Image (tube, rainbow, N blue to C red; front, side):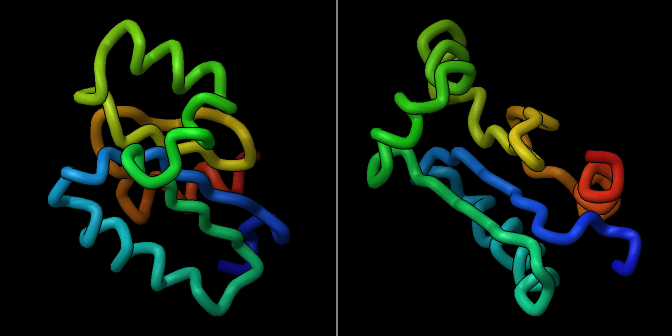
Length: 96
């Protein structure tokens, strides 16, 4: 992970009823000792964070909560409707 940008940030906007979030939490544990900040917002608990992000709020308004999760790396939307793989996350962490 030496090529990963330091002080990077991964933000996930998630549907709390989504049963796959454990899978992504396991993936996030790979980065727990790095300088990568992980924000994981659940719709039912953090609706204010969803409303603050105009892109996510518009997506939900148009497509519904079924489009979640939405994943951002360093404020760039990289994936919706499923969690990124480890390979995808590493790619975007190096790119942005």
